[in-house]
Length: 273
Ligand SMILES: [Zn+2]
Ligand SMILES: [Zn+2]
Image (cartoon, rainbow, N blue to C red):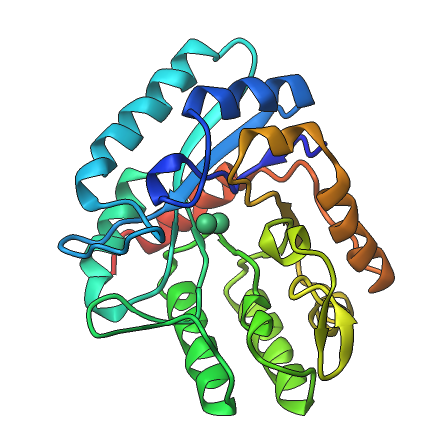
């Protein structure tokens, strides 16, 4: 099992199971030494049923994680983070989160625009460009500490083509330019198993198309469990699926990455534009 996992959800987002404490107990049993909670962040006034917690739950999320951090401090290090999308309209909220939380990860789930339009389904070149632009903005502004599932757009985009390779290169360049690692994600992309696309059978993500490029450009790669159920700490099956993809691309990766040290450095550098 990973020694450090920075991608952990709670029931508050509406699509994860179990009590917060169960995640901690199962992580300890599995041998995890550093556990970061990074539930889907709320935006004030936005209700996204089954996608993210409501803003009213944020305080309870913070106090629960802090309580567990103290209670289990002799057995595991616990950190308080959030998974955010870049959304211009909520830039002030994101900056507040940046200051208050130990770290933030970027999960740019589609063409996210919390107020006007929520489309998780990317299927055109233009949409891929918007996706990349959002990732670039978040990194350029120093808001996030890693790019979660950088190829999440490929669950809906129907094929690996030249445009996809261009996007992979662009995200690799963003990662290098702003020194923000990319994540190989053990969440639903591998949980669902191989899927049939125009380019053949593959996991929705992570994909060799992206990780070949990340390997070639020597991006820093972190594995994230993206865990939505404490029971999943009991198996390494999905982690191994991700490692298979990484090994096939020849990637080196860090299973014990100190995200907090990097987050502190970034916050000092950017606090605050
Ligand atoms: Zn989720
Ligand atoms: Zn996640």
